[in-house]
Amino acid sequence: MHSDHRNEIELRSVALGYPGKRVFRDLNLSIRPGRLTAFCGPNGCGKSTALRAMRALLPADAGSVLLRDRPIADLPVKTLAREIAMLTQSPTAPEELTVEQLVRLGRYAHRRAFTSNTDSDRRAVTNALRETNLTDMANRSIGSLSGGQLQRVWIAMVLAQASPVILLDEPTNHLDIAHALEVLALVRRLGAQEGKTVVVVLHDLNLAARFADDIVFFRGGEVAGSGPVEEVFRQDLIEDVFGIECIVRHEEVSQRPFCVPIAACPGRRDRLVQD
Amino acid sequence: MKSAGPIHATTASASRRPIVLALCMAVLCLLGFASIALGSSGMPLNRVVLAILGTGERSDTIIIWSLRMPRLLMAGLSGVALALAGFILQRATRNELASPSVLGIVDGAALGVMCFLLMFSNESNALVVSIMWQPLAAALGALLFAGVVILLALRTDAPPLRTILYGVALGALAKAGVTLFLVDGPVHRASQAAMWLAGSVYQARWADVDVLAIVLTVFVPLAFLLSRRMDQLMLDEISAQASGLSVRSTQLMLFGLAALLTAAAVSFAGAIGFVGLIAPHIARLILPGRAGTQMLAAALVGAAMVMAADMMVRTLFAPLEVPAGAVTAVIGAPYFLFILIRAGRIHA
Image (tube, rainbow over all chains, first blue to last red; front, side, top):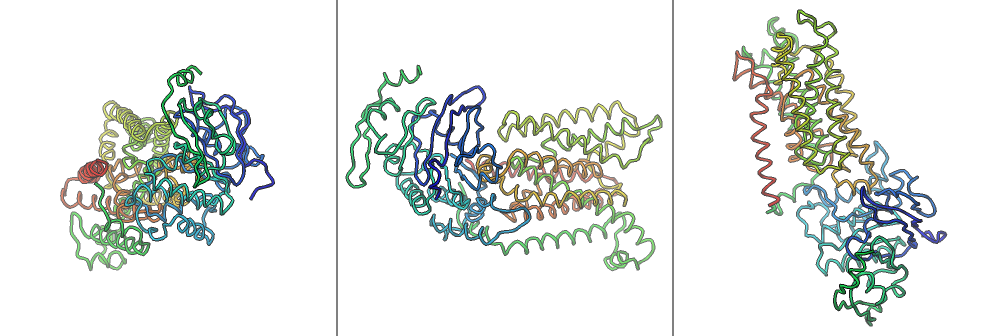
């Protein structure tokens, strides 16, 4: 879709953090267009922080975040929302909202003041509902849905935003394995069909290996490795990043690598803490 | 435990909207008629209608047009203002406990009026400037206290409950200031102020009604212009921001608007409590979803609440003048408790 740019999103020497807590000192990272990139790493390594910076929800203290070579800090809020949609880690909305009402909230950035629903709004909402298999549930209140259904509704809202880039912060959190697979398959399919650039924070390494094109490994406020799954999903890197002992094998059916964790490795952990 | 199926199944139907709104309207009209007919001297309906049309007996016409009508309209309009202020605050803070009185804005407005009365009274307790400046003083007080609440809340990125506590603390501060004035201020003004503070529309005059109506014609459309932003604020702050809303500037605008609406109501009708808290709840119950229609419903419910309260104080306690605010509090406080208890059960 945007093949004229080598990188969709690029972070250059970015310093990031919260008051009293610096998370990244010098973060350099690039996200390739039209691919599904997974952010992996242990708790507190900065995955979600990096994701928020890419959506300008957390301002960079230094350095620059670029969307197709333009600094995102310069883009108006609504323009940015039309370019990058984001599903946060634990989104909330009133229980009595219907599925359709919630999905329609994704259209905010496309609406002009004082106008009602346009045809393109209605089309985007209908499409988002269809793609997430929610058409039959459009009029149900979100309070009556199961966890997996609700997560699909949130994804539908993000889809309705119709942006070329989608960021998802742990979309499989609190989901059982069947629903997690369902959600990731959906994300994967949408990315492939519409050439969207998708970045997903994932806790589960094997889900990342199964669905992602690229993986970025974070460790203690640094990028420990990034690139195509085949290149970075290596035993040494994973052991180093997570402080574990593991074996990486190739799985025949999906033609993807997978990781068998053996044991936590206290020595490595201690070294990490000292860092 | 959450209630299942049947309740949720009916929530979506957009076709319900006009029916519900029409019902609200009908109740409001009935209340209006009853309110005009009832009073220290009851009036049969045919005489009410004739008097309204201006073809009735002269005494009837005077009672209705110069006594009961301004009072009724004042009650209705201040109800609208308080209900909208409460609705806006509940959306802006994403907290169903928020309301102009809980967040200290009512007391802020009251303090503004008190300062005004104190500063511009002469030795014989007469105002040295026009009473028309009083709403401005209320607005300044309300804006000041709303501003401090939201700045504290934003500065510390406070969770919803703490925002409420900031409001309660500031409200207590304003109340203390008002009490000092009542004890230490000019005697005549103090007794007048005490009645006004409890929330009453009994002194309503056409001039006041006119001013309040003009103020509302400016602010109500503004509230509806912001309704899409309020819809977006149903999402948590990060999701709302990610969807393209400037959350902080929206919250500032909404707080400012709510403060001005509160000030308009308080400066004319006094501190009528719980309307701003409960009218939006009822609206949300009967019309879930979009802010625009819900706001309409809240405005109608708010008007009906204050009108009904005023009608009760005029009939049940006659010839005593009990402030309408006392009735809204007597009905409102238990309802508020009920909401709290029910909310507790849902989350348990």
